[in-house]
Image (cartoon, rainbow, N blue to C red; front, top):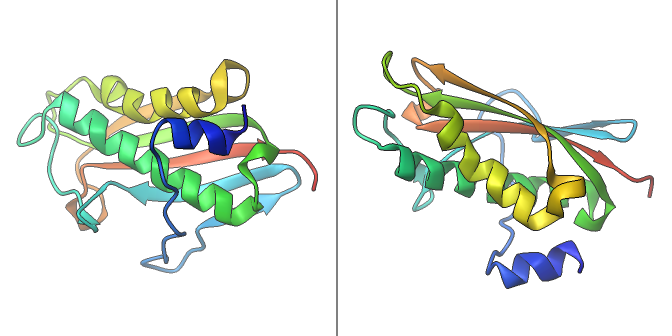
Length: 154
């Protein structure tokens, strides 16, 4: 099944590439690797603001991370032209805006990891990952995630 058929089955429409909010580019390709800049969680088109362990619970954080995965896929599609060229999702790095005593960053990040696995399958979608708790994220967003993908030559 093609990646686009899988996205349709999951009722996911890829968003257009987001315009950077500062001095960076959305992605950089070097060789067969594509590095995607961090994407923050958005809700209703604006930063999904909040702090895990204070005003956002783990399940809502997981939904925020899932929404970021969709945004990352939109950026990756814009960067490489065809998601079927992806040969491996190499790594996700997740920053979770959380209180000092919140310890479920890994569960929040599962929202993105699980979606990536559903879309690409176990062989391509299984990836290395880091999940960090941080004191703050730009615009007060609850989660930010970056991704590295490997692609086949065009």
